[in-house]
Structures are given as C-alpha cells and as structure tokens.
Picture 1 (cartoon, rainbow, N blue to C red):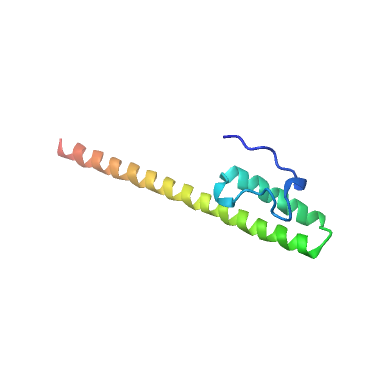
Picture 2: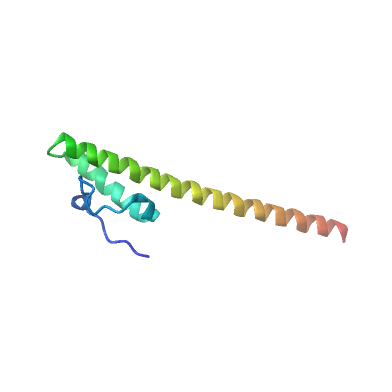
Length: 96
C-alpha cells in the first residue's frame, strides 16, 4: 500500500480529515510526524494551533513506536525459532 506524500501544509492543526492513528501504517505515521515537526519548527500563528499540532505529533510518535515494538517482537521470535531449529539440528547430528 503506498501512501500519498505528506507536506507540512497537510498536517492539519485542527485534526480535520486526519485519520485515526490506529489506521496508519508505520510509513504513513512517520511521514505525517515529519510534516508536523516541520510545521512546528516553522512556527504557527497561534498557540492553540501549536498545541493541536503537538498533540497530533505525540499520537503519531506513539503509533510509530507501536509499529517498531511489534517489528522487534517479530524479529525476536524469528531469531528464537532459528536458534531452536539450529539447536535441534545439532542435537540430531550428535545422535547420528
């Protein structure tokens, strides 16, 4: 699934049309987070807009972290499975 490019202007401070972070892929959340950070760095006209951008950025960062934790768990499981298979192969090799 490809995501549309995100520009700093796409980071809506009012959250309108912003999808729930739960529905975002890692790449979509990361790209939107980059846009939010860029928008904050440029300065926003109002304190309220800055706060809304900050809150959206926090939600996006949490979503990215969820994806990364899940990816690490999958890698850890794959490594554990590979080690178990290697150990079983060695055990069977010793018995032969």
